[in-house]
Image 1 (cartoon, rainbow, N blue to C red):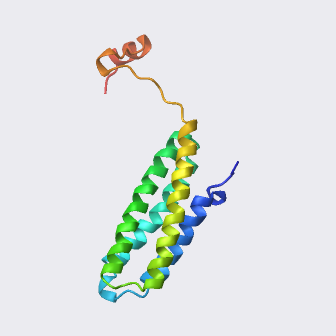
Image 2 (image 1 turned 180 degrees about the horizontal axis):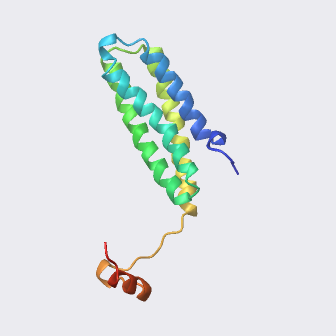
Image 3 (image 1 turned 90 degrees about the vertical axis):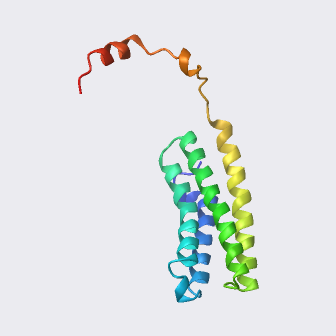
Length: 146
């Protein structure tokens, strides 16, 4: 069992992706500094950041939720990399390298999320109109004054 988010392979791969994105976007034109450069950097940073935040909450349910958010950022990165390719801002070698990193990271995050989701216990909830509040809570609410 990992003791830190730094031990997670998906976090390490995410950090590698961030490094690659920063190196590649450093070569983008200066007029893209607040456009595609910023967007790509923020989306890439979001991936390992959400993995570590989910890990730090010490709950598999929270970890699964933050892994889903990281996967959303991963999908965003896929679009941004494709846009950079279409705008001829990245070389074929850089595009291929980022695409390979993205593919590996995507598969690993998906597998990790599947594993974590198997351990999450889901509460069975009653329909909204059938939920019952505990008598203690009802009594406390009756005497509550803001």
